[in-house]
Length: 297
Image (cartoon, rainbow, N blue to C red; front, top):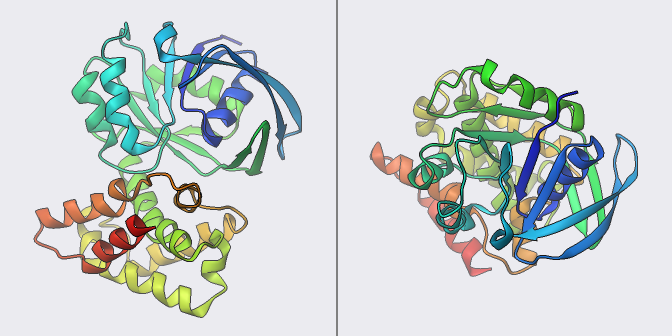
């Protein structure tokens, strides 16, 4: 199999997940973090098989060029990172964004206009604790672009390598629709699980939370004609319930951030929806309130 070199920025659970599986598949992969010169053996527990993987961590100050760049930082860290990358020799390598939120691709292109930017919609579950990485749920990775019609053929080798390392990876020709659906799902599951400090599956077990989730979603119904014109509110609701069930044992990224007293991605999820709604003179007071409540935490 052809080999590519990968630079992964962001040493959270998803960054480690891809670094471990790409390295296991003998792709030259570096994981960039705030610190450098560290080596660690990661014990991976996965439905695809348990294994140990040596990971070498590098700092951006020791940046070396690669064939592909994967960015897996928090959305609020992206602009600062892009400012740093703009001073590196990036060439025209593709950049894959693996993070929650919208408005991110436009942000990257402000600083790196020569690089094709793809967005990955990932449904794998992962939990990182010290040197142990739990692959808590098999999922898919849909790759696509939100604003430019890049031809699938340009990324044929990349998709094949990613799919071999951590299946299933597919090109998504209707990526904007998939990302908007994921945005709405995250806008319901993430803040509710963070506010109540519960795992995802608790949303569908508690009648109070079911009602709270549906009420928050109902407020977004006027936005469907702009975000998901081919879906009804009930179809979106069923998608939310399906994801909550499929990731029932998972802790949402927003809940994890709140527990660690870290800044969340709420501004790039519910905040993004509020900004989009303003363009159409739509008011979202409940979403605005839930942002305030999350920030209080």
